[in-house]
Length: 165
Image 1 (cartoon, one colour):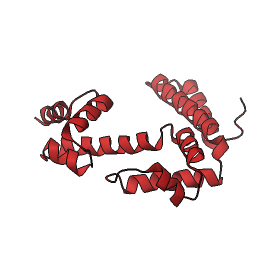
Image 2 (cartoon, one colour):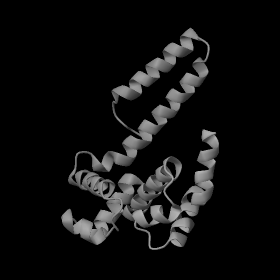
Image 3 (cartoon, rainbow, N blue to C red):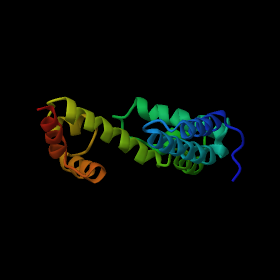
Image 4 (cartoon, helix red, strand yellow):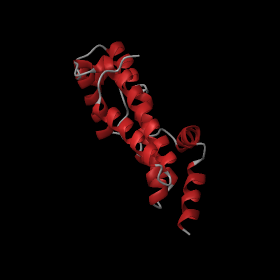
């Protein structure tokens, strides 16, 4: 696997060698973190090599911004592809390849993250949060939230209230 020259990866390697040579307390843990960082960079480089400075990368980035800017709106992927002047099926495939999620999954993850923040940081009712995030019913919201986080919204909120005490 050839990834080319990347200064940040080289710097991490040099840092590992320097830490290992000096053997200061805790150097193994720091080296382990740097190795994980290097592996993450390599994976990212390989996953994104097809997108380098291309039209597809720009389209996907615009789509991510559109979704992030309007997380409360229901997502119509076909309309989004039209707005971005790209083929719907190619858009879906490229989006998933670029982000690791389909556009709908990406949108859902943003909504769940926003719901988590509201549950942990406000006293807004679960029904209101469900309504504000555009879910068709509180029951669907509860089911989806539990599926994505492993906890019901009520359990999630209680977990954070206990941490505050």
